[in-house]
Length: 155
Length: 64
Image 1 (cartoon, rainbow over the protein chains, first blue to last red):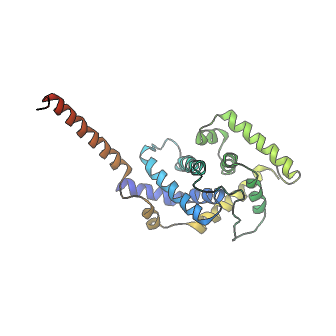
Image 2 (image 1 turned 90 degrees about the horizontal axis):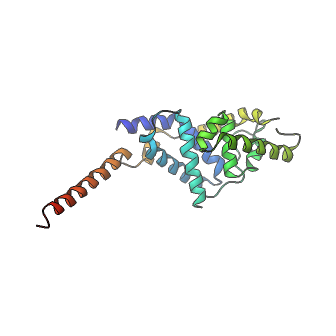
């Protein structure tokens, strides 16, 4: 029971990660609910193996993104090419953020989200299990792509 | 605007999503299976050990 309580405390504190990823990847509410549930299940299954060698949030991003990619690969849920707009605030650059994310495939979207979360290239490489060079090259390409797409607006 | 300047925008977006979708501890608890992952792992080990002992005894007594 101790493990369960410990896990629930961590999950409650960091559940925003799972919600914002689900919202960024899945178009309809049903898919988002399914994704949330599946991610929570996978987090719970892998929790005993989590040894605290990285921050809880880093571990959660790793498991959550892997689960999302599995769901997309199995075609169980539909990828949202355009993440849902927030009804609560239509302020400043939120529309731009939404449009930027819509230009990216699932894998590139993960890199940009992790970058926007403030992770270093090395941390992004660790979370996505790819090389540092790969992260650097891909983020550079993404910047170029966005620059040509948005010209004066972005990057 | 560059990608860095979108960081606070993303922060506000994810905070707003988190606040809108926040679930209580009870709701989160309801999503978890009853079994602990560790317990199910131990049960598999237990069953494997029993199977191994059965084979060992069966071979040891020569089918008596």
